[in-house]
Image 1 (tube, rainbow, N blue to C red):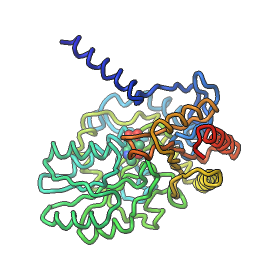
Image 2: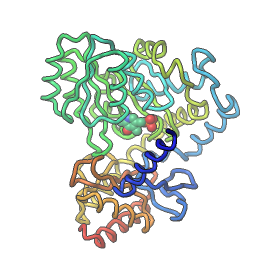
Image 3: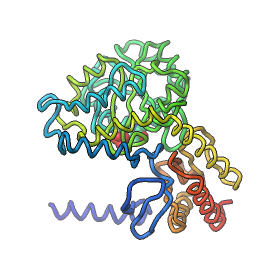
Image 4: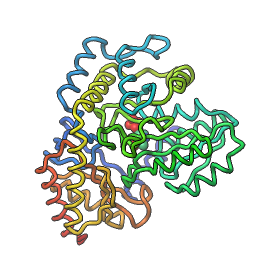
Length: 399
Ligand SMILES: *Cc1c(COP(=O)(O)O)cnc(C)c1O
């Protein structure tokens, strides 16, 4: 019985290798800076990190983690309502709410966890949740879970298609709650959700709007407050979820931000809050320090934007086809999956770490490498990466 189980796993793993979808792990032996030391490859320029502001190795952020370790110890040792909530979690939650412009927030061990908690806790059998087709996997799974737990209705609208969403909202008039969920920035394209139109539609149909700003917090808007700030709409999104594992220090953790009642209800009823430990205090303290650092250094966001604009321009000038956009996610379409994989592999040999994505993660024929730019990249880092991309691109016949 058990032999058969292991055999099946091994056979499937062999299949992954044959199909070229097996992920070889690359080991890093340094902080996640603009360059890392990678086992077997030496120092490489990183173009595939979510460390958008370079905060994960800023001394204030690292120091805050050290101090919290000394003050609070390694862990929380139980769930919050049993063992008590650390004061650093309260400070972190106040900072998250202030940053994204809501009354309150509640932290989770990851944004994955936050997205799993949200619909399953807040919705019931009389309600419906309507989700953008390209939403993150954690939103999709959170909705699946909600459907099983609460028997709420679910629906998917075509990516950023307002007409389709309007129709679905109109068809859900009889529902007690209509909840619309979208990514703020879609991670494979770097596209920004059409927030003003989404908010207007939600007002028209009296729907609750939820935005997952994981790739937008610290990134979009003049001071990095996210998609809402980008559109001058801070305070106009009902519920925001986001991660502390990307721009905000890059360690781990996520949060739900919204009204005091929303966060209190999740505190009372969200199963991940009731049955799973809170963030380690070290991580909470580093995340808090990241938010404070961002608030004191809005110029980081400007540098991120300037770096991304430079990189995009240079790619275009070199004959590549980056997807147009305004975010630091810059996908370069190369066509077939094998080419994206080859490009990524050759670039690593040339000292540039950037991941290739192919079908089925992205549509057939639109395989790509996804470059992610950071404020921590120097002009020299970017130029070195661009030189390598030009060289390898010519070699592979892409330009
Ligand atoms: C990365 C990401 C998540 C998951 O964040 P974690 O905190 O690492 O769990 C959730 N949603 C979106 C849109 C993301 O991009």
